[in-house]
Amino acid sequence: MAKKRKNGQGTVRHRSDGRWEGRHIVGYDENGKAITKSVLAKTKLACVEKLKKLQSEHIEAEPDKLKSNMRFGDWITYWYENHSKPTIRPSTQKGYEALINGHAIPGLGHIPLNKLTQADCQKFLNEMKTNGRKSHRDTKGTAMSERSVRLCHLVIRMSLDRAVKDGLIKRNPILGVKLPQAEQKEMKVLTKAEIQRFLIQAKEEGLYELFLLELTTGLRRGEILALTWSDLNFETGELHISKQATLVSGKITISEPKTKAAFRTIILPPVMVEVIREYQKDAFSHLMFPSRLKPDQPIDPGHIRKRMQVVLEQAGCKKVRFHDLRHTFATMSLEHGMDLKTLSTIIGHVSAKTTLNIYTHITSEMQENAAASIDRGIAKAEVTEKAETGTINTSQKFEPQKAPRRRPGTGYVKQIKDNLWEGRYSPIYPDGKRRPRNVYAHSEEECEALLKEVIREVNIELAEARKQAKAS
Image (tube, rainbow, N blue to C red; front, side):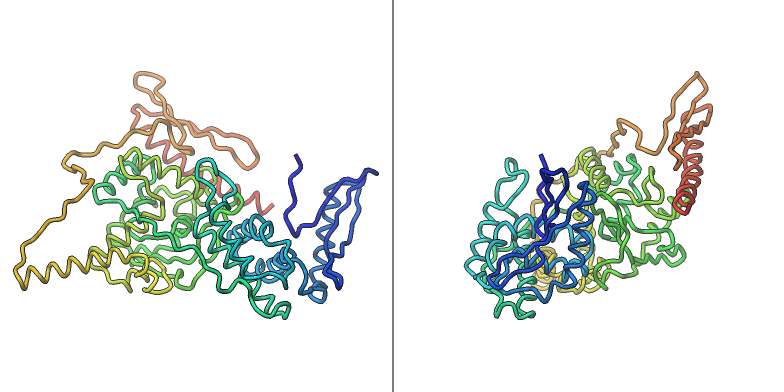
């Protein structure tokens, strides 16, 4: 079945004479009827290229042809391509396009721009909230999240604000619509006992340093994955945050943070610095947490998410997101007396007000504890202990579960004789060939140590080979 082209991309069809025809709306007549232009080619690929060229030429001349009675779908497509898309990040573009092409245009696109009313917008947002979900309807229901509805409202509002500015309409019809109430989601954080078990299991999975650094700093996932060795001053403990890793359409890109507040320097505890120093001895990339299969790229964010869920399950911890480790850091910091302004700076919020809004429940609990302390000190009130639910017996030492299989990029070790072990690492080089490296030892521990060193040397060699392959 042919895939339907998105609104604003024109149409492509196979003619009866064997040629391919592409059509694109280039303007509107006095009655608001669309005016189209066509291109012809022998192949579909050539037709699409010609259509793209026609569209780019049309964009430059289009402002003079915009009309107040053009369809809203055509207007929001024009606004996005010319005013919004050039100013936003690729990851944001993907979200905007999904809302525009998947919701705004199907719901409101047929209405003339100057006929769009507040009632139309209100009805559209109401229907989007109750029946707007496009996928997983059988498991998650038909309702859209409050966040998605609000974001779609924002995109439509910005496009109509521009229409007002350009004189196409007198007022923005979406102003004044009633939005769904903000959903209050319960914040999940790990307890101290869960953190202990989680880190022990993470060490077994080879992710100890990454998760320990996260629980020590509260960095965003993209920020921690983009860290390089040059970002850390081992003498002062200063860690500089100046970039983030983002997964867009299956490709990891490194870019600057969105806000100025995200550019920051934090001081790591001496113990954390020593852990990272020891971890650096096995470094094979300029990145602090590189992919073992592609040393010049960060670990895939999706891989981290999946491995984290495995670690949590094996450690007997509640299911939380990576971002909840950031919440865990913030919660523990506040509980140990860190002030809001300092915490806001460390985690990269624009203002302390943002931090306060997110962690109101923590600060409220702290105020209750402070009041109770004053009460006990001044009024000699009796202490009433709150029953802690879900407490975990930490008197028993937690033993991590052994991984059922070796992690990718760590090779393998096997015993070939009574007192002889073999280790092998077989990476694929840029030329597509696999070149195995073997090591031998009299014990499993010695063989693992030798293999680890070989892997580090080979990964450095691979990173250089990939760099040369890209340059040539």
